[in-house]
Amino acid sequence: MWNVIEETKTRFSPALAQKLLLYNNHPDQRTLKTPKLNRYANKMREGLWLPTANVSLAMINGTTFMANGQHFLNSIIQTGITQNGTLIRVTTDNEGFSKLYRQFDSRDQARTMEDYVRIEINALDVEWKPRTASLIARALAFITDQIKLTESDQVDLLRPHSKEAAFVSYIVDKISPSPKHMTKKPIIIPMILTWQKCQKDAIEFWQQVRDGENLSSQMPSYRLREWLRTLVLRGNAITKATTTEKEVIVRCILCWNAFRKNRKIKTLPRYVIDRPIPKAI
Image (cartoon, rainbow, N blue to C red; front, top):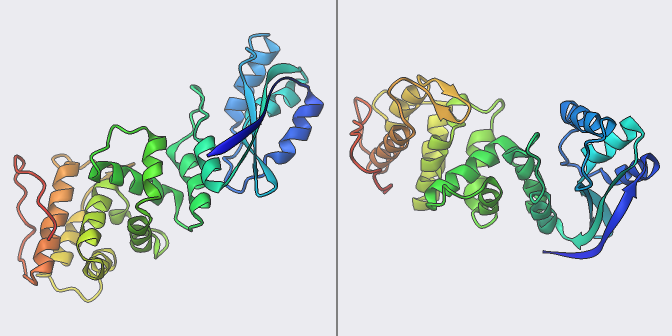
């Protein structure tokens, strides 16, 4: 995925740090975190900084971008104290840069899944919202029975499932702001499963659930939409007292199956806790 062309033990002076930061220009680089910058600077002032940091630069089609090191280098500039570390230069492409970026982490300020996703979105040359793409990656991990994957490996699922991701992005982010009752992992899971069964019907069904336009009270999409809008949604979770992620997935699929059968329903389909998640038809 990349070719290492330099790996050199280096003394990073403030002047060199300033020069290297000119490469910190990737359009999807995360912003500088002031608390993290200050923690690094304090360690340097106290003489507690270990020479384990690296600055990694990646050349993509003749342009060099920084993959790691912005907080380290800015701390050197802030303190004026030269530090030892390693300078790494590689050549790669956008896909390789996305994977390289995800190699680096920090215990006191971890890169988030959305940080990873922003770089992968650039590599895929798509216009998905990072938060939505993060939810899609988590949903794909569930669907493919890989929930124990690291966040970095979950992001890798976006590439082979880019068509599913594009569908979800279209449904969830078509209007602004994105409707809250559509932007949770247990709702995106059945969105993907139903699209895999019938793309045309999935677009129609989930647009109805999203928009609520021209629906009668006995339409499955109406019943599902009204129920989803009653749930308390926090973060990625469904937090209504007795509502679980499994229940949301089950009710979504049961309403979809009724829609596919062109069947009217007077109430939301019943959820039985000890039954498995039904198959989408």
